[in-house]
Structures are given as C-alpha cells and as structure tokens.
Amino acid sequence: MPTCPPLYVNPPAVEPYAGGLFSVAQFPAEQDRHWRCGVMWEPYACTPARGLGDQCDNPDAEKEVDDGVPLVEAGAFTVYGGYLCRTVGRSEADILDRIRQAVRLGEQRAVEQAFWTGDLGNTPYLASPDAVVLNPGGLPVDAAEALTPQAGIAALESYLRENYGGTGVIHMPAGAVPVMARYNQFCGCDFPLRTWLGTPVAAGGGYVINTGPDGQPAPPGTAWLYATGPVAIRRGEVFINPDTVAQALNRTTNEIEILAEREYVVGFDCLLAAVLINVNC
Image (cartoon, rainbow, N blue to C red; front, side):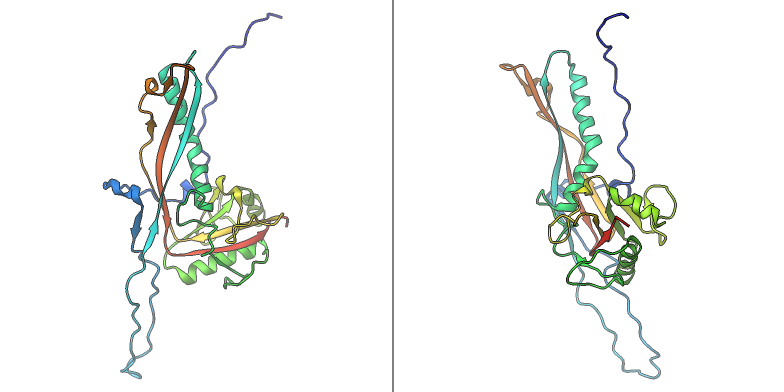
C-alpha cells in the first residue's frame, strides 16, 4: 500500500440551517444608517378595535378611544467571526473567504442566542421578566407549570389571537421540534414551520440556552416556548476589521488576527408571552 500524505481538498459545501429565526423574520432595508443606534416604531396591530351596540337604543353611548400610540424600541449589537493563524500556505483570498464564511454560517445562531437571552445588552429579548407566563387556557399565571406540547401551543395561540391583531411568531429550541411533530402540532414540513393556525415557528439553534423569564434554565425534561409579534431584523454589510490582511499581520509572530463583523438590530411588535412544556411526553 503506497505511503503518501493525504491530499488537501476543499471542504463540503455548507448552507446555513433552515427553520431558525431568519426563516420567520422580516429584513427591512434601511437607507438611513442611523438604525445602527437602535430603532423605534409605532406598531399597527397592538391597539384593539372595539364594538358598540345599536345606538338607536342607546344614542348617548360613548366610544372608548385609546390615548396615544404604543412605541416599540430595539437596540443594536454586533456578531463577528474571527481568524487567528499563521500566514504560511494561506492566500489573502483564502483568509478573507474563511472569516466571511464564519459569519455567514454562524451568525444566525449567534443572533438567536442574543435574541433569547439579551446577553449582549440588546433589547427586546425573549427570556425577559416582561414575558407573560401562561396557563393552559392562555391566561397569565404567577408561576409556570409544565404543560403538554398541545396545551403549550394552544396557550400561545390563544394569547396571540386575543391580544394581537396580526400574525405573530412562536419561538422554541430546536430540540422541541421532534416532540411537537410527534403530536402533530405543525401543518406540513416546509420552512418556516407553521402551526395549524398558520403561525410561523422559529426553531433556533441559538435557542438551546432554554431559559425562562426568570433567567433560570428550564428544569430537566422541559422547554420554554415564547410568542411575539412579527420580528424585524436590520443588519449591515459584513465588514473586515482591520481592513486588510496586511494590516492584520503581526510581523513579530507572523500571525494574522482579523475579524469579520456585522451589526444587528432585532425587534418585535408589542407582545411577549411564554409557556413551559414537557418534552418527555
């Protein structure tokens, strides 16, 4: 058998995973670069419409009108991929491609983790004390109990329909998907996943942190699910820091340390609810 070194070849082609936060989010294009300072907007679907009976019987009935317009805010954070290696055997094109791929393939998971935890100082985020914890009927409770997968989805759907005028989003750790599928909680297998009421589901790899509104990890055998209004993600172009490989080279050690970075702002409309489900069913 011949003895020779292995041939160095290109790695397999890789695409970012499907079904995560990016599959359900809107990506508005902003011309004003000040979005990097954070954004705010006035949502449409957070104020309910109301009804009034026959005014022939009660001509003096007054119509209730909400005072003002709600305001939603979202803060900025940065996701990056890094490269630290020797220059031997590496072209500049290879180095730049490698760090750009690090961002392309890793950014969704990093954004999901920040969006779940708020650990980059970003707001809003899912596992927030502001989240309304629900019971099986979709009503707020003081302390969470682990619901069945069906009851958990039902509670979130009820809360969404009763408190928001549009189509929201349900967020869950990727590991909860097989349990939901076992109980036939998704309508079809296309991405984004959707419930039977058409609510899109984000099954995030970065959601594996699986913490509750109290900041504590879910008890063993359980998972937290959240519901929000629609999610909007603003992100910049990937930029290299330093600008060139030559600037990144430490000539003393012959090492290159270089980053590819991208700025993000992630926000959602005016609703945040949570349920704890049992995944050992």
